[in-house]
Structure formats: structure tokens, C-alpha cells
Length: 271
DNA sequence: ATGCGGACCTGTTAGC
DNA sequence: TGCTAACAGGTCCGCA
Image 1 (cartoon, chains in turn blue, brown, cyan):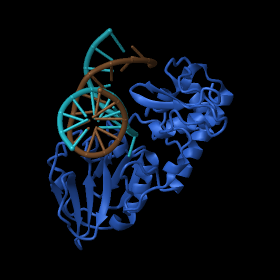
Image 2 (spheres, rainbow, N blue to C red):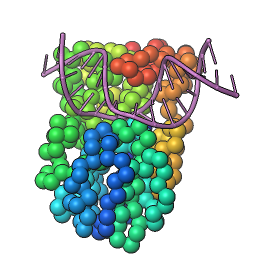
Image 3 (cartoon, helix red, strand yellow):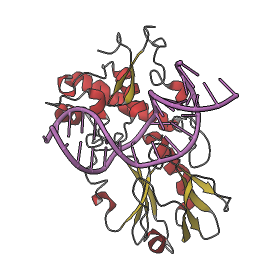
Image 4 (spheres, rainbow, N blue to C red):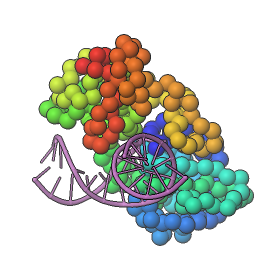
């Protein structure tokens, strides 16, 4: 479910409620997520104060004086703040309960996400250590993408979705960014010109920035940390619009399957 | 090093 | 109306 804007929306939504709060207890109802919730999490985290709520790619990092909680929402995960414990539903796998009885609840029907604990620098954790730059940072620029793409035969859509190249560009925004940049998603990454990488770089930054401003893209029942849905879905040009007319040329948008992911584009506007 | 396909899960929707 | 199959926002891992 969540792409970077959703994760950022979640981060911003939960941060004010948990910053500088002390963990009173941790309740794990289902430890079998993508990776098991570590048995030591409860003992390590209890008594800690949340000192920072950060994001790296689509990973959320809750920093304490003793270590860091690493959370990924996978395809269907979400986090909510509750004022007090409510009866947990079927997929409410974990609660971090704070002094004063408010809590952070992790929900994830498909269990593709994870909740992990690491000591030391989380950036050196195996899941984070080889991630590419943040798309909204200056590290992601035309030169970087162009250089990295040389001699790469993979379709450019797969290339920009590769977290080793750049983090946070998931299926929805890859489709949207390529459309805005006028680049055909199946184009081999290494064959795309520098000028077109310039357009793509700008498109990635624009689409993500706009989506964050809108509170993410609501699909099905995603809600941010404050429980409010995002509104970006209405602004999508191609994702979920296969067979419908292109917003620029009115040609029919094509939909194909690339690496098992829905890929939508306009054959006239994207070359 | 690169690229590909499978794997992890459940819920919803499309199609017969 | 009911059953089944396909598909869904991610991404890691192992193999060629």
C-alpha cells in the first residue's frame, strides 16, 4: 500500500504524539510479519523515550537512547495513534503503549511489513545499508541517475523502482513520473538520454512532493497517522486508468504487466 | 554485476 | 448468488 508519500504522511502524523514519550509496554499479538518481531523488542523498548521519528526510504525509524525501532508498512500496513486501548481487530498485530495510556498501533492484513529492533546506527542495518539516495534530497539529480543508468538494460520503470538506485519510488509514482517526463516505461534505462533524465528527475520530485502535500494517495482504506485519508488519488494521470483516454492527447492509455506490476502509459506521449 | 522470478500473506474484485 | 482466479500499494532473496 504505502509509497513514500504515505509513509511520510504517517511519520508526520504520529511524530507529535510519540516524541519525548516514554514507552510503558509493548504488546505483540502476531509476531509473524515479513520477519519475526524480535523477541527482545518488548524488553529493550520498554522504558525508552522516543527521541526522534525519522524516515529512510519507506522505513520508519523510532529512535531511543538504547536503540531504534525499524518499521516497514509493506503493502497493507498502517500505524495509528489511539488515545486509549480499544479492542484490537484481527490484523492489529502490535501496540507500543506510552505512559499516559495512549498508544501506537500497527495494523497489517497481508503481513508484508516488519517491526524490527536494532542497536547502533540504523543506517548500517542490513535493510538500510545499501539503499540509494532520498528522492527529495539534492543527492538525487540528473547526473546521478544518468551515470547510474549507463549500460543498464533493465526497463527504465524497473530502474527507478530499484531501491538501490533511489528509494521511495513505488509503482504508482513510477508510472506517474514516467508519464510526466514523456518516457516509455519499457525503454532500456541505459538508452535514455541525459536530457530525458533531467525531465524524469524533476518529475519524480514533483510528483512525490505534490502527493505528500495532498497527504498521500488513498487506495482502498489507507489512512495516515491522524486517521485522515489522502487526496492524491484524484490527481493520478495514468495509474489505474488503463483503457481510458490520456489527459494530454486523448489516446487510449495502454496497460501492460512489467515484473508483475501494473504498468500504464500513453504510447503517443511516452517514447 | 545484472536481471529475473519466486516468495511472503490476506482481502477484494472480476469473471464465469 | 456462489465459487475461483487474478490482482493489489513492497522488496528481499536466491539463482542463472
